[in-house]
Length: 244
Length: 167
Image 1: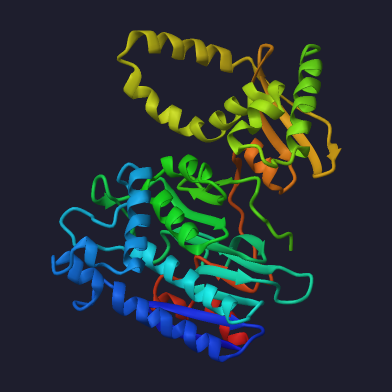
Image 2 (image 1 turned 45 degrees about the vertical axis):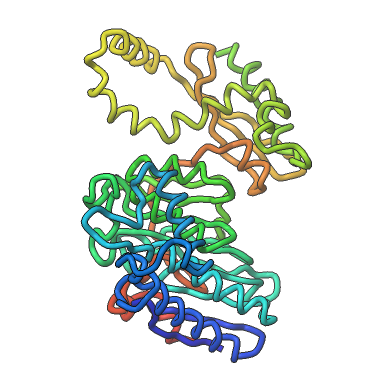
């Protein structure tokens, strides 16, 4: 069973190899709910209301508290390069919300009994089990310069893969310390067991520019694949590279 | 060069227990100190040249104003001319095959690179270094694409769309 929906401005595809097809419906319903509650572009969302001062920190739902604490942790760890509060702009926790919400959707599939699936939200991936017995999900990482080519293929069973790169939407990641677009690296891929961590680590590494290479490599339980602007590749020994 | 061989053998001997060591109740932070004293110095040093080399080069002009640092930099430049790398033998361990390359400055090990290392967690903790390589392009049979799509518009032309359409 395979379905694609556009939520949070992203094409989100669910490839469910077992379990009840209604599980996918529930996962999509959750993602729409997350968009309604946490989008800074929706005036009635919890995030917008917090930003306008209509809610205090004490009045927030545990979900938003969790998202904001993740934002805070990465902001501190990167010395402010990653931030949900770019000066002159409103609160924007999107960089954390996406991976966090998609990971929870995957958790819902798993809790509902699905054991083999792949969720891809705009290029950020959560997988479970195996698509065929004995074989991992083969997750290709897009080549930063060639849209129809890959730079590496990862073999993943239960895991998450997120990539932040410059090839679409222009330079959309800003250095929170300067408010300016970052340079130094063109593509960051992070593999770990949770998409909230993988996605945020990739975005934060990107925001750090060249310093992000070493920073991301030191993140616990994460393996990285980073391409710098000179097209050098830095990869962790623990990266599950799939030999095709 | 003759001295390099025993040094290399020692370093391999020092690294092997690190690979085959499984961190049980021990704290991860203790791993390099407790499990592999011979490899400790290398473990600390090996991460730096891999990832900080470009950064160090870029940072150099900023520090030239300070006299002591400038002197050190000149020494470093002279010493770099004497660096040489030696590859060790492939060693089979219960975790997989291990092969290292050692870079020496005179008789001092300044970098250790894993040419081959098993993909197990102990390896990652013992060797937090990064591999460096050239970017390659490939096409392959895959199930999904990471980094393919940031926008719906981009999705239409993306690999993921092709995969979704093919099923």
